[in-house]
Length: 182
Image 1 (cartoon, helix red, strand yellow):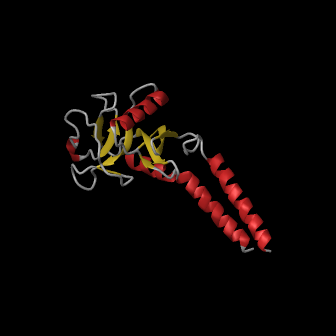
Image 2 (cartoon, helix red, strand yellow):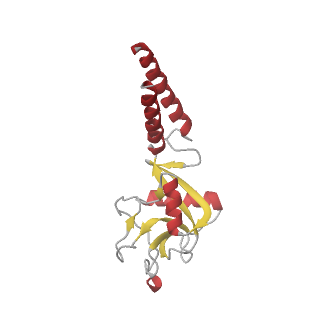
Image 3 (cartoon, rainbow, N blue to C red):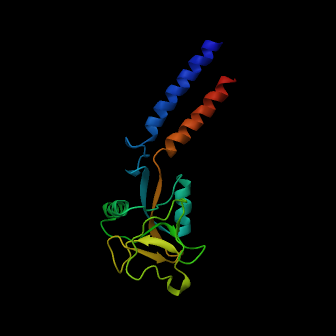
């Protein structure tokens, strides 16, 4: 019986490794359709959505609207948009000051340690601009602007490179553990 359980455990671990390999779309741990940069995976969504609905869609993918932490990361995101659309499309990212004016934060909870505001931005125009976009039309090519939540825009989600593999390994571990007791 112990040998049988050991054999099942071996097959479960082998399946976990094979499944984890199949789940990623590249050698850096991103699912198919996602692009790696640093320790995260990014995906541009050309379909337009309000900022809140865009964040909900990102959540459904195990992600958040993208946070940006360096000029290199900002340039990468702009390239991702240009490659997908051929233009500097206004695109939602995960910054907001919805809780307190001029106190900007990222939806993924990371530290606000970089910004690339366009001149005279953020301005909270008409006291309704609380959400962050890249490629502001008055200064295209990467500058940030605050915008109203309800305006539909394209958006970019980001997640850690290992999140998909971790979830798969947890699912397989549960399956193997359950099968061992049967």
